[in-house]
Length: 235
Image 1 (cartoon, helix red, strand yellow):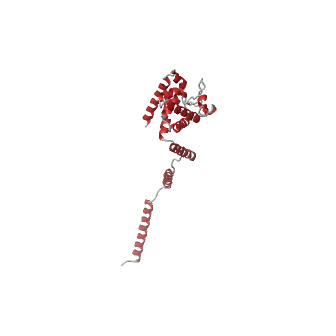
Image 2 (spheres, rainbow, N blue to C red):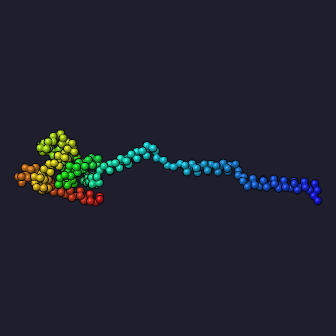
Image 3 (cartoon, rainbow, N blue to C red):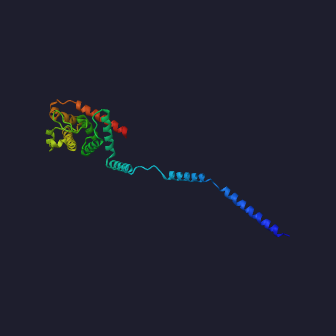
């Protein structure tokens, strides 16, 4: 039979045990204050690293986007064959160590040559070879005989086609008039490209008199051959 003293002893023992269990449990979850602060700092650093990503300046990103869009528009507006011819001219100028002509200008020259020769029997690259032989693609060229521009056409010849001396200084007009003249010569000489090319450079009168020489034609022919080889390699 339990006495009052024994019951009180049991209760006290239970209270002591419960108190000790709670202390141990708290001890298991305990971390020094300094360590808790350190963990918090590490967590914050990791979170920041995940959030921070390299970002291009808005101005640079906008500029790159505009350049990309501009190139896409430019490429879309130019036929692949014209781009190949322009690439070829850049290489040809570099190979011969001649004065640099901007790509924008070369692209215009190619476009005009293709445009004005498309309804003729004259190869566009042949015109470019003549242009190289005549002026090295320098639109401001004027010879000692007064021949003007990219294809070195004389004002007296241009006048026959209703083009003034001043207008010959305009690259597009110079190209268009020269192609019209060469086409006229092709018709006159029954489609003979050799004779027409010689007459273009040395005059119809010298051809008629038998005084014309083939050196000019041979030079143009050699340039034409090399230009076609460069285009073929780039395809």
